Image (cartoon, rainbow, N blue to C red; front, side, top):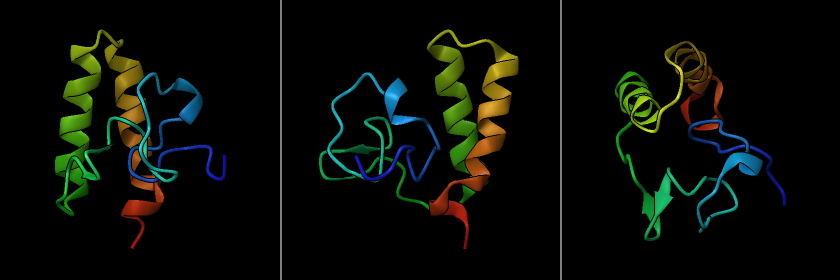
Length: 78
C-alpha cells in the first residue's frame, strides 16, 4: 500500500471498512470510478464529512478534530 491515508479526508486506510477502488482515496471519498464530492470547496466538504461522521455515531468532539484535519490532506493543499 503506497499511501497510508486518504488524500481527500485524511482517514487512515486501516480504518476504512469499505472496498477501496483507489490507491489515493478511501471508499467513502471515491466510488464508481470518481470522487464522491467533485467540488473544490474544502469547507463544504468538511461540512458533509462532519455530518456523515455524526450520522455514523461518532462523538462530536472527535468528529470536529477529524474534520479540522481534512484541511491538511493533499487534495486541499493548493
